[in-house]
Image (cartoon, rainbow, N blue to C red; front, side):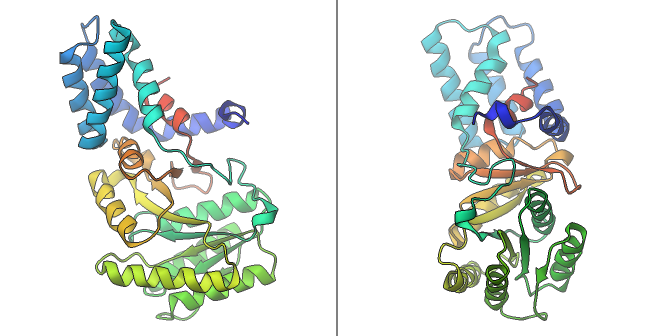
Length: 317
């Protein structure tokens, strides 16, 4: 199935609206960079470099983009500055990492792979619990039976927040008392899900980074006990990052990726920031697929990430 067959107008409108602040800043800088120029030359490339760096794309990724544009210009000999948006869309789209999207836009789950287990990691305050709630809503809406596991037992607020989302969405939350072993909560959650033929399990984990080894040991233990019940668990280790923090999100990604086997990313809070360029840099630098993007506070405000649509929206196409 091609991307354009399932990326509906409503989804496009939501994406465009969610990226408004980023687009306004980015496109205005881009327009100024090419103002009065008829072709792409060194001065435009210098301006582009500044545009990307100040849009939180990151230095390394910016240099890659400039290099690709230089090579394209050299190959095609003469490229009009009016063609720059199209050129940038093509080259950045090629750079971005996109996963297989095994659970695609319709949030259907392959019945032969149930329960589909998502272990969610990330520091406190990035929108981790909200992301879990939104995913639970989308998967349930698609007809799946969903169970949540409150394995962040170090913060009473984390369990309470997950409970609230569970009630809002209408899905069960498996929990234990404050300070319980997170791995024990995960085990109970997976066991309950399997016994009740659940399709999707989403496990919350503690958002601590002060002790990387402790975090790694804890997450490794959680995975091991889940695998006693479901050998393939977890299908996703989903790192949630706050897009509005710009370069700080890079640092968080670096630390969590060093601490555990992250294989998917969710970038949140893109609707409230002009720093949406961080999605490009993080995807490129860590070579881990961005799977979901958060575009607002409502239950509907999460999308499976599609690089071509994201880039097209970013460049106002």
